Image 1 (cartoon, rainbow, N blue to C red):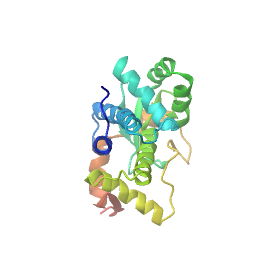
Image 2: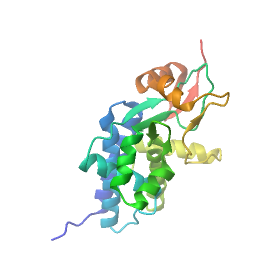
Image 3: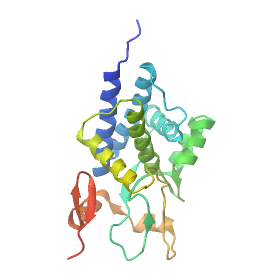
Image 4: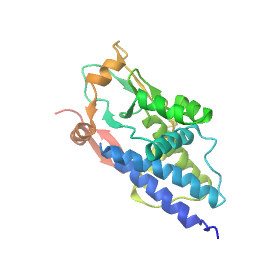
Length: 228
């Protein structure tokens, strides 16, 4: 007899995703992104079985699914979490400060292991550099899609992680900012972004330390305190 998947099962997995996502945002541990990938896959599986719309029309989901399948069934993805500097002598323009970098040869192997839709989804939703591919914009945008999905399908939850995400969405709505991001970064005064990845990025620990020193936080929103 097939197991019946309920709304409560879906809500539990949605809670899990936002919990792991927020842990990943604060932690450099490579295994945390694996939990995010696995939860994303499980969310779609449970939603489909419970009779809700699935995410198979989302490039972000298809890309995450391909990376997850490779990480679970084939080999390590050797991902590393890095951050653009909050203070830098070199001006940096970006809509995200965090990067989740996977060596480009690993991503090529992932693309070889999946179908055309999976390959196309990775190329469309991730950011390619010379030596690495950044999958964080893909994860971030899927988080946005999932949040909006919970509103549309009356699957909202009340955990702290979810409410923190909701606060960011409401702030963007109030100021007419886009919810999803393009990803990537540029050096407007010139410079090689590939070399900057090698020498200019910070660890997540250093980013968090500087963020605590320079910004005040309330309900997940950060306000610059200035430099004393």
